[in-house]
Length: 115
Image 1 (cartoon, rainbow, N blue to C red):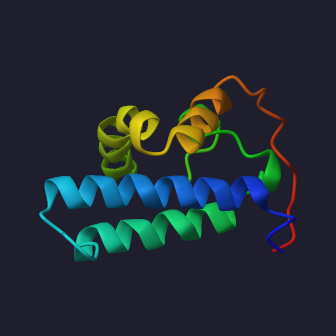
Image 2: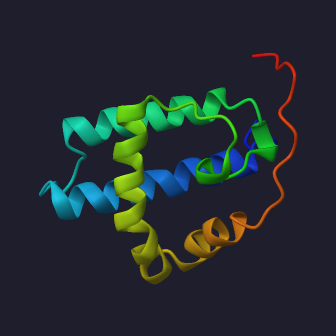
């Protein structure tokens, strides 16, 4: 299944690193995520698994469907604003891939998806 979902797996890894970076620097978490960030990480992973676009998924900022709850969306935006620029220095390839994904064309919304 990993080969089939490369983009989703990469997004999961990227958001995990961003949440880790944010939590470590803002919540004084050294080894593990704090409870709030752990819940957000689980929520983000669930949303990625549920994305109707699958491998044709755009970045969340450009997605025509907002699947995050408003409070979770605000938290993830804050994390991305904080961690995004730092990704270029700490995880260059993932950061650049995420940056270039902004320019990827958005596919039409699929009518149905088997889960």
